[in-house]
Image (cartoon, rainbow, N blue to C red):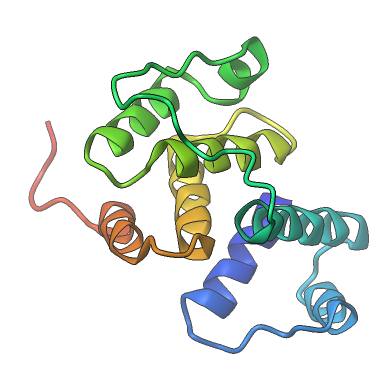
Length: 157
């Protein structure tokens, strides 16, 4: 399912190609690209739930906790997000790329992904997808884009 999300994000968002609004057309397009129908359905539901988190009248992650609070991860979240991923989320909050609300959206979307625990690179893509779809986060999206696509100069020791 994550491969489908990446394909959609790179094909339609990163390339400024207009996203097909018809679910059947999109399903056919993804089938032609070689994805399985079952996985396509799961990916489209994942995207719809992301939109619901941000567009719905009920904002389940409205962040009203003081800034100095610490996020405590459940056992399931710790299995899906290793220490490096959790540290990266904390870093993104500290540099104000993520707010408490967008962090919770990221965690929600991560927990809906199936399979192995998420790698740090995959987490970065989920953060990009959430920020792209969250209104008012244009600056945070651009900062995150820089973090994802920035290539270090020289050798890393």
